[in-house]
Image (cartoon, rainbow, N blue to C red; front, side):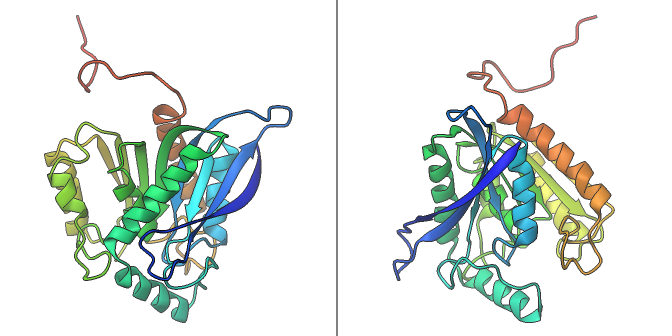
Length: 275
């Protein structure tokens, strides 16, 4: 499908300086069908905000038939422009990551979901995705009951609970408290060579999800951090693996938000096999 690109500046209640959050929206368009409606996806970016690779990633999702909202996560500290993929930019992004309040991250997700559900071309069925910092934010977005699935690429800081101001987030605590139990589907993809999330961290996340009986899949692939980034990936971009994971993500989205199956009846589980 063809796509269009625009943005919305949405007021933030928690920004003391009154600055709005800019949410970029990339949406499919079908000539001759001005009233077409599509599911929505919130696409959370890395610590560099909405860069070229993030926009291209979101554009591919949109071209598959989804309205995609990309929030500018650091609106409290700077404008919506992308942060460069260099040493200074990395330091700045990491600095903002732990200066921002967890409540502000929560508000950003809510505002992005609110925006999608208000758009005339969105049918209100919402999924989430993201990479690095955005993978963690996509995971947290699944706490919102309107989000029916989340596909998280190499989500950082979940295992260490170090996101946000004070470096003490409550992500796994909320999972243990049952906030994802019996809800939507979560998929997490990690590279085994990713130094940001060691094996012990991946094991902790897996155990926490399983102990809480969350509908979840955790994939460990032969890749490094940022393997889906097609620019400035420091030699870590794996295009073939990215294509495979993108296909898996779209299967999850198609199954969870691409079709309206009506209200769920009965218990979640495998179908009974009768001999």
